[in-house]
Image 1 (spheres, rainbow over the protein chains, first blue to last red):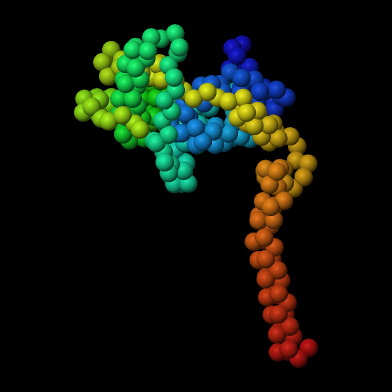
Image 2 (cartoon, chains in turn brown, purple; image 1 turned 135 degrees about the vertical axis):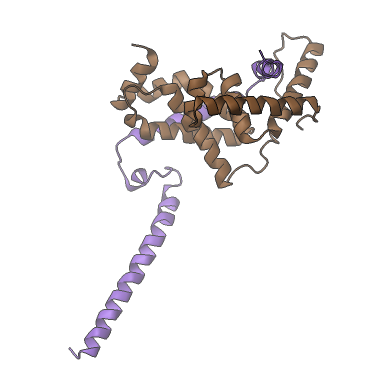
Length: 183
Length: 88
């Protein structure tokens, strides 16, 4: 039995430690997605906690054949979408880009080049509509299979293909227009 | 592969995501474990944060209590009026 299936069964049976097991396996991936979607640490932290609370509340409702990863990413993505819709968050969104230091093993000149390129890509991503940004982060950032991304976004694979293509084209235009870096 | 896709992939690979802090992890696990525990109090049942449970509980109870009291006064007042009309 693979790890995810075992975790789904444990969640369904409300086994003690089931949630900790899921958390251990998926916390970094969910955090990475939310940090990139939310663009600010404080907002990402709120969404992260809400996501895991939802997992705790609804884990027992999973079907035996549920795809755990798809379910978790769907919750995280929906929490982010809901926060955008409610307007409760988002003030100052996209201003919180955290320019963290590149690994010390990289030479300073190279690090400066990487930071410049990161700044350009981050600025372009920040200017994309949310639907485009999330599809790029799921397909390219998380490297999830297209079928899974389509399920997470609640669209057909054909619709995903079109959305991904439009997102890439929009990003291309923004990168070519040499936008200013995110402050 | 599409050059933009490749460029984005390289940037996202190099993009330093803020670290998931141990404090956030501990806080998240504490809250989720509390959700899984059987309800031992009204605050738990209403899924209120323990620290702020009294204030939050008061806020949540305020509207139903006030509305309930107003409805009771209205019903009693109506009954008294009916009683007066029929001279009972």
